[in-house]
Image 1 (cartoon, protein in one colour):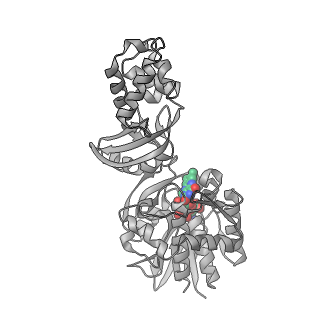
Image 2 (cartoon, helix red, strand yellow):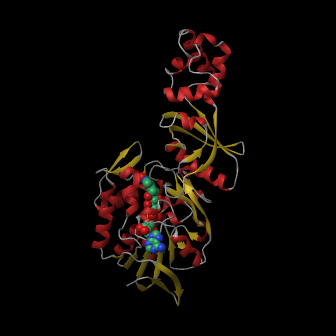
Image 3 (tube, protein in one colour):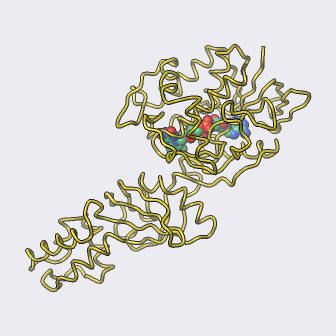
Length: 405
Ligand SMILES: Cc1cc2nc3c(=O)[nH]c(=O)nc-3n(C[C@H](O)[C@H](O)[C@H](O)COP(=O)(O)OP(=O)(O)OC[C@H]3O[C@@H](n4cnc5c(N)ncnc54)[C@H](O)[C@@H]3O)c2cc1C
């Protein structure tokens, strides 16, 4: 019987264990915390957005974004749903986003663990891996709890994001010691920092915007949706989605800006006309009172004060050209980014084991037979929306099946 040693009992490691054990392999999972699947529990705000019915190349990022996307050929969304059914988890879909029907991540963590144990998988907790060596065709894994010998080894340690859940970056050290090339890990799906006045004045405001990211003045990516203005900068799903590009550029000390359009549903000239009409019909009101009809009052005040329009200025004091200036300002509000939140706040990491070293249809390391790398330890990061877990289940399943053959 083949003995497979898996390092890490997260989404990808437990999935690899499940598929390998189903194929009659002896499986030992070494986990350095005292609990399996800790990160699964915090996913999707505790509801676990486990995959997405819509998958495109743009939903995956990394040096080779096609690596994440093309893995779907070997483990598709339908395979994920069948896998969940096998585990006894009914799913539900909301606008493409797939969740367990129970709407609780505990279901996923609990069922996955139960099924692994039922198949005879051994999970050894509080076990820190110090070294992995391959000698005479066998893997020797040295830990603080003794040594293990296996025919195959699967690295499933996750990244460095949310280290409280166990993924503390130690997997990069293990991979590097085995001779694997690592692309610098950085936070992704993370909040961005700015010292802009609007962040102080409109902190706590949530509003629909179009956000355009510029790196050294060049447009990189856009996203429309709900922005959350905070005292430290910008947050919300749209910011998280574009953050990996901003972080990567700031790490290279590039100038990074986000242009915010607070009226994405209107053209600039349409907005100017509308503002003018509203200012005209309320001449005795303050400009702030007029703008309150369009925007949250804190945001309206923050924007007007930066245009030099004080709280008391009356609508009648502005001429027609002001409506055009205001429309332009509010549709092209440029925020200079000064930094980003760290690994603690990040949902995932960009960077990791360079995927050019991995055989995609098996997840095996090309140069080291019987060594596999799966999940977020690899240089694959997905958008918010179930793409990271899809990659964790998919890569784990492919590695588990192949390692046990
Ligand atoms: C707050 C939050 C919300 C998220 N929400 C979603 C979502 O809704 N949908 C989605 O698709 N993705 C989501 N993600 C991302 C997703 O959870 C991860 O991409 C995925 O869990 C990664 O799985 P993994 O198995 O690669 O790593 P992990 O789940 O991090 O598992 C790695 C395991 O290895 C263990 N380990 C690490 N190093 C060692 C070592 N040296 N020795 C032994 N054990 C080790 C860790 O303790 C851990 O148990 C979210 C992430 C966070 C932080």
